[in-house]
Image (spheres, rainbow, N blue to C red):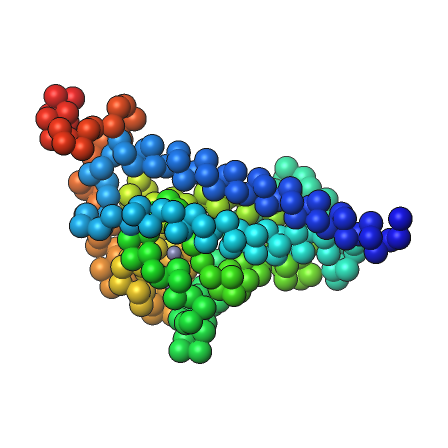
Amino acid sequence: MSALLEDSLTFVALLTAIYAATVLVYFILGYGITWLNDRNPERRIQKGRRGEKRKAIEIRQSIASILVTCTSVAIGLFAQHQGWTFFSPWDFSWWTAVPLFLLCMVLFDAWFYFAHRLLHTKLFYKYHLLHHRSVAPSVWSNDSIGLVDTALSQGYYAVITFLVPFPPIILLAHRLFDQINGTFGHAGFEYFASRTARYPWPMLCTTYHDQHHAEFKYNYANYFSFWDRVMGTIAPNYDRRVEVLEGEAPALNLRKAPSVTGAAETTAAD
Ligand SMILES: [Zn+2]
Ligand SMILES: [Zn+2]
């Protein structure tokens, strides 16, 4: 077999494995968090809207956009494997795993923030519009993104391996974490309102990105509120909203979902 054919097959196998795993995780998270949401209806952020009506259309778009995300990851890993990057990847060790993972998060967050700001400019918004059709995002919305938009916001993996020699396992762990974080971030139900999700902490909760979808011109970042605070794009009422949510957070319900018609009685009986 020629070297080129062998390399192509390696790339396709890598991409197929990453894509199959990501699609599986997308559905596990989607149905898993829906199960949780059904049991905690009072945690809904946009009470008057039902974003889950767009489920079918969003799943269809996600299946396509996840392929773009996974292609970016596969390009990054394949480039490292072939020795095309400036440095060969560091060996994995448990001592450096946490700081490297955090570094990967911080760099991704910066990449995402500025790519996202770019996508909101006049010139690029046409690529980002599709994602904003979800005004009340749901567990299915995280990957309901146009393909050019996805290539920009998820192109990180294909580029970062050339600049920082992350061990492949760190990049894959980060991708998995971002899939989980993004699905909760679009879930439309708040489970993470806490002191650490507001000023002066840099972390955030689901309300953060939910506000980006509902109000459009604030909260562009992915993991941390840092860039939005520095660049003056944080929603002025975000910190206050989290504080209020913290105060009124109901106990987490993991038991049977209340029926739609008898919701009030079931809650009272419980
Ligand atoms: Zn946006
Ligand atoms: Zn979004």
